[in-house]
Image 1: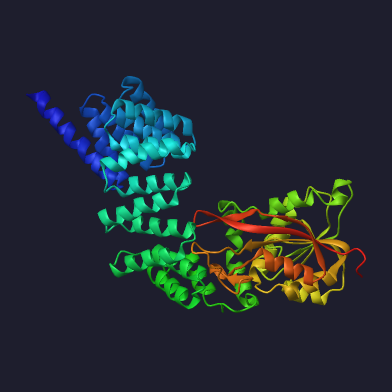
Image 2: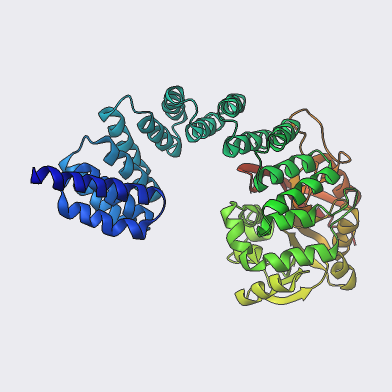
Length: 485
């Protein structure tokens, strides 16, 4: 009888600790779990609760040690295997996570959670067919689970079937109408496939039934902006700001939505304000977006005839130098010395710390080109012309400042048609969200040739990722004719 009462008390404590961990009350759970462990013999259930407590408090190494011991005693316990798969996945051990997830499925083939975890592991490993198969079984078993549906949609999209990915989420909205996560995932899929009309429709449906958050309105603004409906986009961004007033990204969207769609360039005051506020987190943010332009410029410059001949190219003018990422990327090549020009004093302060520039000038790049009579053998502009719609004036000034035979290397974001084949803007360039412009390839060629350049090379790098999708770009090396000037 005494043993019965002790065991019952331990069970109560164990269940109480588990509930507190689920609620995120880890400090309160710790002494209760310790009391349960003192009253009851070791068990897989206590091991699992202890591991979840360690995970919740950020002690993944302790969680792994706890799970290793538990699995050594009970290798076929599905719960322990699933928990260790999660810990391994966060630690970057994708193969180990997949092995544990597979063992969990073997131990309990009918458990949809085990199938979902294995599917997620396959997704991380790039095994899309296996991921789709596992996640389809999980969704079939529990159709109303929003996490399973979002994972399956992601697997389908990455396997090249965005229509099926959207269908999974659309069905999920019908089954889980109160899930803002499923609705937002559906809007995001539409944006990535450039189906902006459908993205707006889904966002408006979410708003009409009261299932919308700041992200919903932000994505609606993105879609409207991509359709050239900038006034409506501004309203959506302001709605997003009401729901997320402390979000700096939403504040930036609101600021950029005030630009005029037919303006030929972003105003100087806007650009300066944006980048002064962005300077301290600029590089880390771009790295997180897989920003690729500085390294793409480095690759292109390696084909410069002088560099191929091991000769130095310089001096170099870096337009819109920002924090100095281009100078850092190409600094090991025989190029330089560098002069950098940027509107933002805070960005220039970060560039100055790198000690890569012989001179740094705070100025608008067109104004600076017109004000100085120096001629340069190499001018670079990384991700700067996206703040200009019309490029003719800038190209005219660059042409004046290049030596005959000099190179101008620059990037733009490519203007593409939407899902319905419609090209926004004037067909040559269009204002996008965040106050950036995209340019059509034919317009770039026409503007470059009209300014007296010839195109030496055109690459198609991915500029960065936005909304989980690649942003296509154009990277050009153009030359001022050697007999010119």
